[in-house]
Image (cartoon, rainbow over all chains, first blue to last red; front, side, top):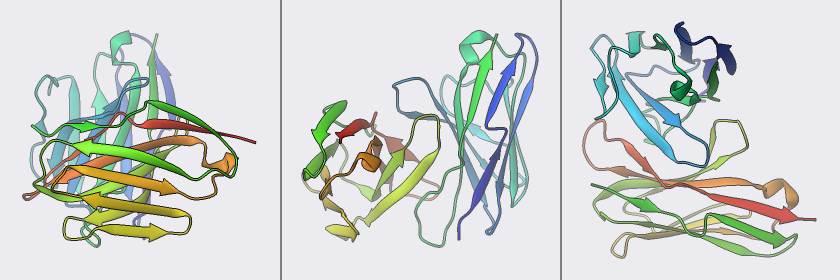
Length: 115
Length: 113
């Protein structure tokens, strides 16, 4: 159980364009979705928390207008990086909340490179 | 604010060695603690989850312990193999609804054949 699908796994985009990352929970319903960012040799940093049907809550220092999160259903959440810049290049990982074991499952991550 | 520390940042051992990875956290009011494995460029794989009321969990060659009062956890890997080479992350979940995970920076383990 607790299978998570995250796409794309890798994307290269030009500066100024937008990129959408999808995260699906395949065999469970995720009321809550966490989005993390990881820079090289750094830990995962929580960007935002979203609850299905509600607006996301962003961590301090994360621009909500730049990182748009949609959590319209219990099995799908998307993160859109708008007007991407090279400093947005990072590894983005989703984590749907699975209440069955109170642990956390994670997507396989998306490596974003902005050139 | 919860802080999680993992030292050292990197570790290299010969195959077959038993080893211990350490994790410390500053706020003992945690809900649970989880150890993850991350391969280069990949997502996280959950290894062991210890609830705050538990002292240890075991899975195969892995054993994780938790001492909440002192803010420490250890991950013990028995008879290490080259396939164990990866980054091991420790994360604590604070108490409260929708509480988030706080991660350490991880320990990059290299097991030499």
